[in-house]
Image 1 (tube, rainbow, N blue to C red):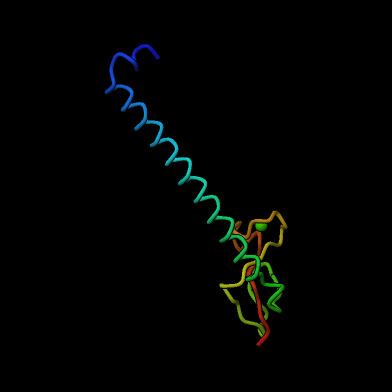
Image 2: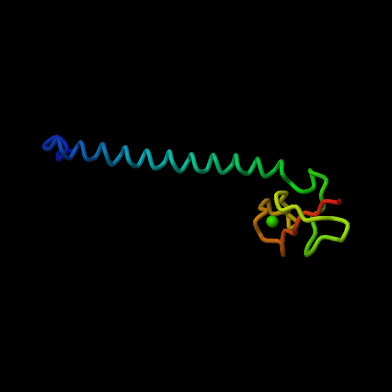
Length: 93
Ligand SMILES: [Ca+2]
């Protein structure tokens, strides 16, 4: 604290550093927030809610795979575990 009183330039530098840290935290919070909104959008595009069926492997002949609808067959809340774990969305044609 004594150094800050002696040299105003150092105080200014501290303010800049603190401002940069605050800005960084805000950016991180924004990324988390937008990530959650993205999660909500995925929630509405769930396979089952759109009339599809989640299947491991290929879809049956009377259904087609819809890649825009997500599956979470292992129910861990994450639909990005891959088609071998979460399955693919099959919608009847
Ligand atoms: Ca999953």
